[in-house]
Length: 400
Image (cartoon, rainbow, N blue to C red; front, side, top):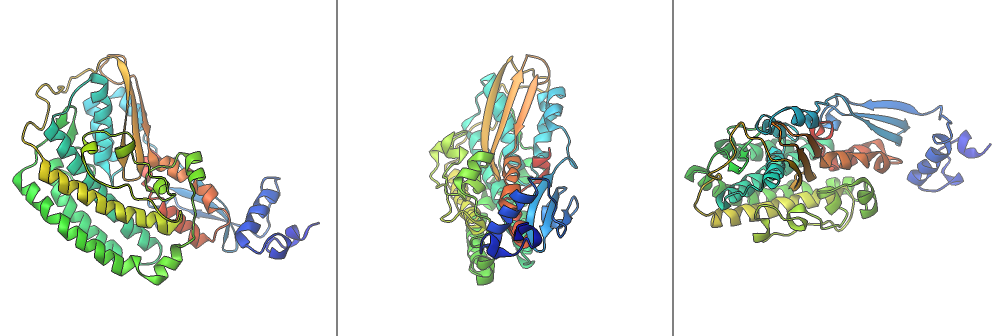
């Protein structure tokens, strides 16, 4: 019998690299039905702070190393797609704010955009500006919360306190428009539910320089910390090939060096009028994904600043916007937006009835989570948690 089965961590038999050796051990043992008597099964979740929600990771460990890590879903499933087929369009609209509670405005936009495209309904220019301002502010709040939670995953508690401070300031703004601070539902078919007033515009203008200074503080406090950087550099490399195989989008794909962003690739709203860059990482590891998100906050600030300077007068909703009893015309449409975690897509099919005949939600978090099992294999458990955190998962979106 090979030494591999007598002592699976006798590295000289396979490779000097423990991760490489674990890959060989996994393929030789698990795929052929053999069981390592020294391995241990560890459940991360479904209630565990490292999973950021009701997610279960079934991990098999050999010492500190991960032999396999399989995500287990189903603890939070609410059948959003089916609810969209039994509710009227207006009844289902609040559901979109509950799919991703960190970037609900993007999901509002995707659903409204799909039905507006189906019905050929134009959105007034002012309403398009309002959508962009709210969506980008909400994106900043989402990324900031990820920043604080990610650093906390790695053992640093202070940043999450700063993250909540920034988030509260943004929620003070969005509450003026949406009336909510979490499951926001500000958009309507044909425009917005409310207009922006001078108080909002002034507070938003004041927030931009404030947030730019805070980003500098983030760099001094976290990004430049040598312990933090060594904790992430070279950990969890996800190249373009694995991202494409699993359909990963958003900062995960841009962290692999691919400059794909729905706002540029498939422009919607008025994004083609704005000057902003698509940040990509120089290295496809956890640090690269971290840096991409911080740079995206800077770009969102640029977009909000431009929108506030150019916002035109006019109606915030189409004068013939559909009423509550609206029945969309028969047909089908697809609409995609760039959410905080990647590409959000909604495909709607209507037979002219009071509710959608079919509805399919494309959640970016599901695709991003799918690659975790492959990415975590052969890593240290602590590094696997860093990889999981770098994916920026919101479990109600994954297990919707």
